[in-house]
Length: 330
Ligand SMILES: [Zn+2]
Ligand SMILES: [Zn+2]
Ligand SMILES: [Zn+2]
Image (cartoon, rainbow, N blue to C red; front, side, top):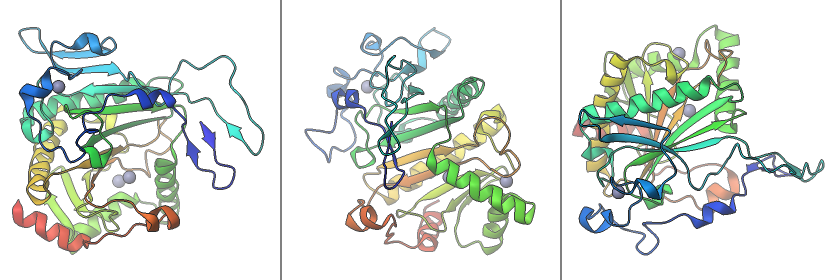
């Protein structure tokens, strides 16, 4: 883990990742899978368990067959197996040990590409695994933050198309979550309230960016969304940490997410997206000010010179129009 001397940017140099298999390399615009052909080579399909490291957790059906499987990432970006001699660097060229744990959650034994092929009961089973692994790592004494994310489609950085997601447990709070936590803490100090709860209240009153509304959940077109249709999903009741989610809440979340992916899949063809969990840092210090949420970022436009140069995004579709379009399709 290197820290850029000029910007302070943190970069993981992980050459092991270059060896990953890639379903998309020969045909970057590859659409929905042709299951029969792809199954033969896919390390995540049932029957190919020997191609991945051993299972850390398996959810079995009544017949004893796994339905969801968690394995260590074979090509980890971070690792607890740190070399004995790591270069401490100096004040200009600073290194940190690339510590952490990197897991893959295989979300179905069948070679399906996305959640639009899962029932809401199957999606709920996956969400329960997310929660249980997040809970496991939040009890680990070295872990400060648990990230769960999903890359679907080559434009979102996926290398394998079989439905899966990843979990990274880190011994520090990563920059994007740290920035949100600091801004939330500042808002809490100033207003005595959670910035996300305030946001939900205002969005419900304005009703121009609400994509879907449920007793327990709200889906919003992000006010300053980076990409067309960027949508945030938040629990309506204040809650800082995803790992405390109840089974009942998971069932209703699964229904909402399946509907949302279905709607987005009709609006954007093919639908490539990143799905990112932002949960409060471990330890409880942020529990009053932080409010956990999913950020669903469809990847229909590429990051180009403007974004790389300025660190700002250009979104060619207003979030208000995006919300209106998604509501129409619901
Ligand atoms: Zn597969
Ligand atoms: Zn809140
Ligand atoms: Zn966030």
